[in-house]
Image (tube, helix red, strand yellow):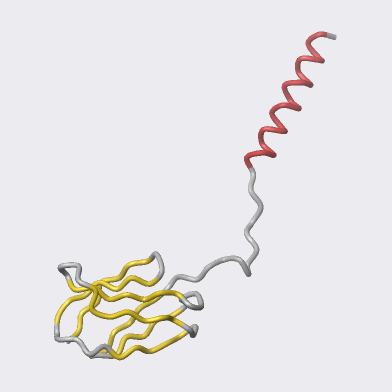
Length: 100
Protein backbone atom coordinates (compact mmCIF):
# COMPACT_ATOMS: atom_id res chain seq x y z
CA UNK A 1 0.00 0.00 0.00
CA UNK A 2 2.84 2.41 0.85
CA UNK A 3 4.49 1.63 -2.48
CA UNK A 4 1.25 2.41 -4.37
CA UNK A 5 0.87 5.78 -2.62
CA UNK A 6 4.52 6.62 -3.29
CA UNK A 7 4.22 5.60 -6.94
CA UNK A 8 1.02 7.63 -7.47
CA UNK A 9 2.45 10.73 -5.80
CA UNK A 10 5.61 10.47 -7.95
CA UNK A 11 3.45 10.07 -11.08
CA UNK A 12 1.30 13.10 -10.21
CA UNK A 13 4.33 15.26 -9.44
CA UNK A 14 5.98 14.22 -12.70
CA UNK A 15 2.82 14.98 -14.69
CA UNK A 16 2.45 18.44 -13.13
CA UNK A 17 6.14 19.14 -13.85
CA UNK A 18 5.67 18.18 -17.50
CA UNK A 19 2.56 20.33 -17.77
CA UNK A 20 4.48 23.30 -16.37
CA UNK A 21 7.26 22.86 -18.94
CA UNK A 22 5.03 22.81 -21.99
CA UNK A 23 4.26 26.11 -23.65
CA UNK A 24 1.35 26.71 -25.97
CA UNK A 25 1.97 27.57 -29.59
CA UNK A 26 2.01 31.35 -30.07
CA UNK A 27 -0.98 32.97 -31.70
CA UNK A 28 -0.20 33.45 -35.39
CA UNK A 29 -1.29 37.09 -35.17
CA UNK A 30 1.26 37.73 -32.41
CA UNK A 31 4.17 36.33 -34.41
CA UNK A 32 6.41 39.12 -35.62
CA UNK A 33 7.76 39.03 -39.13
CA UNK A 34 11.42 39.61 -39.71
CA UNK A 35 12.32 43.15 -40.76
CA UNK A 36 14.05 43.38 -44.13
CA UNK A 37 16.19 46.09 -45.73
CA UNK A 38 17.06 46.15 -49.45
CA UNK A 39 19.22 48.81 -51.11
CA UNK A 40 19.34 49.60 -54.82
CA UNK A 41 21.64 52.51 -55.66
CA UNK A 42 20.36 55.31 -53.38
CA UNK A 43 16.91 53.82 -52.67
CA UNK A 44 16.48 51.79 -49.48
CA UNK A 45 13.32 49.70 -49.04
CA UNK A 46 12.26 48.54 -45.57
CA UNK A 47 9.85 45.61 -45.11
CA UNK A 48 7.80 44.46 -42.10
CA UNK A 49 8.92 47.15 -39.67
CA UNK A 50 6.36 48.00 -36.97
CA UNK A 51 4.41 51.24 -37.43
CA UNK A 52 6.18 54.40 -36.27
CA UNK A 53 9.52 52.61 -35.82
CA UNK A 54 12.65 54.73 -35.83
CA UNK A 55 15.09 54.09 -38.69
CA UNK A 56 18.61 55.48 -38.26
CA UNK A 57 21.54 55.37 -40.67
CA UNK A 58 25.09 55.59 -39.31
CA UNK A 59 28.47 55.88 -41.00
CA UNK A 60 31.02 53.18 -40.19
CA UNK A 61 32.61 55.46 -37.59
CA UNK A 62 29.27 55.79 -35.76
CA UNK A 63 28.09 59.22 -36.90
CA UNK A 64 24.31 59.40 -37.49
CA UNK A 65 23.84 60.57 -41.09
CA UNK A 66 20.07 60.11 -41.54
CA UNK A 67 16.94 59.39 -39.51
CA UNK A 68 13.40 58.48 -40.58
CA UNK A 69 10.12 57.15 -39.17
CA UNK A 70 8.66 54.01 -40.75
CA UNK A 71 4.92 54.45 -41.30
CA UNK A 72 4.15 51.72 -43.87
CA UNK A 73 4.63 47.95 -44.02
CA UNK A 74 6.82 48.45 -47.11
CA UNK A 75 8.40 51.86 -47.42
CA UNK A 76 11.06 53.40 -49.66
CA UNK A 77 13.62 55.91 -48.44
CA UNK A 78 15.95 57.87 -50.71
CA UNK A 79 19.40 58.31 -49.24
CA UNK A 80 21.39 61.34 -50.35
CA UNK A 81 24.67 59.84 -49.13
CA UNK A 82 28.08 59.33 -50.74
CA UNK A 83 29.09 55.90 -51.99
CA UNK A 84 30.16 53.68 -49.12
CA UNK A 85 29.11 51.33 -46.35
CA UNK A 86 26.59 52.23 -43.64
CA UNK A 87 24.89 50.73 -40.62
CA UNK A 88 21.08 50.88 -40.53
CA UNK A 89 19.18 50.43 -37.29
CA UNK A 90 15.45 49.70 -37.58
CA UNK A 91 13.97 49.48 -34.11
CA UNK A 92 16.22 46.98 -32.33
CA UNK A 93 17.54 45.26 -35.48
CA UNK A 94 20.75 46.32 -37.20
CA UNK A 95 21.76 45.93 -40.85
CA UNK A 96 24.86 46.66 -42.92
CA UNK A 97 24.23 48.30 -46.31
CA UNK A 98 26.32 49.52 -49.24
CA UNK A 99 25.55 52.59 -51.36
CA UNK A 100 27.07 52.10 -54.83
